[in-house]
Image (tube, rainbow, N blue to C red; front, side, top):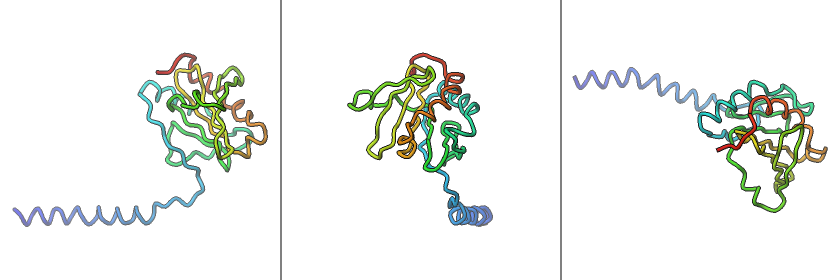
Length: 165
């Protein structure tokens, strides 16, 4: 019986090892897709974020959609350097910091935070899920509101007004 176990392990072990080696050598991403940390909200917020994902436009501020790695219904991106959207984030600590300010674009409220890199991070307020949009310095120099105009409609449709938990 003991030799049967060894043969069984060898039979299943070699193909698994071969797949592991192939995956490690062949899975390096060669495209220039941006990267974004995927939020981990509760089920209720995740459902709202998935609804938003289905409504997001192919172009934002004239930039083509190129979703970030890892792929998720909770993230999206446009252009290079990328405008990154993450849905289901926590309320930003920036609300308490100097330099953050409120803004309203097409009836969607945002908390605007200037980052050290020159980019801006905006997070929705007054919605049942928080949506964060990071706009690179290049687009901020052009005024920065264009992406928010393009995203306001889908956010209003997918994420009702309210206070997120």
